[in-house]
Image 1 (spheres, one colour):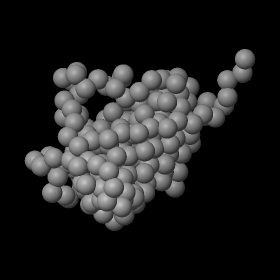
Image 2 (cartoon, one colour; image 1 turned 180 degrees about the vertical axis):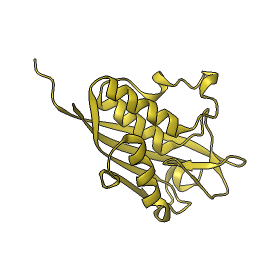
Image 3 (cartoon, one colour; image 1 turned 60 degrees about the horizontal axis):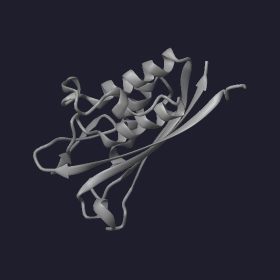
Length: 162
């Protein structure tokens, strides 16, 4: 049976907002009153992106590769995790075509940071910035994101065999 030369993956992640933590989204420290709680830096957008990439390659998920009970990842920079995922993909014969990330949050405003986020993620994934989409939406006051209890992110990614 022939393997497809193109594959897509979907990732989703959620983290709780708390006082006393920095807010990291798409690898950038964003000024805000609260940050995301997690074992690593809790960058919900990069975590969703890692899951999308790993899912496309059928390589399980971020928790499998970087368990939250492993002290080696305590406070880890999620950019480092994304770089490791890119290396895993390359080692399995894949390259990244494009990625699309959606951040769901009532605050802070994401739009002013989008160009820098795209450039940063593109550099780590070794693709052009116009192959990375970052967007944000609110949930119109509904659910945990609407109540400002947490931030969620979804990502899709296309990879291909090289």
